[in-house]
Length: 101
Image (cartoon, rainbow, N blue to C red; front, side, top):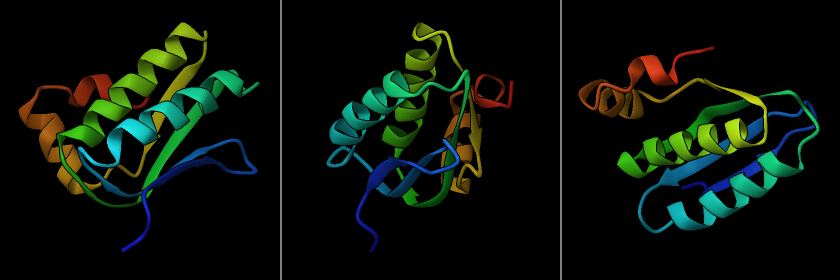
């Protein structure tokens, strides 16, 4: 299992990885918020291609990151959302909100 993490790539993308659940969510939330605030980019992408598994916590993280970006005056889009996150988004009627801007 990959350790859960969020980091900024050299290309300026936020790379989210590992298992997103109640144990990893709070730390990822703080780290992601700090990365968004410190970025000089006008538009950010959260790449979820390395997410192994996600509960509703992962979806909550993405929504928090969107709010953080909006507060910082930045656009944020989500790439490669895993199927389990996509299914939770559909049930929660959040699919359109999380779609590319």
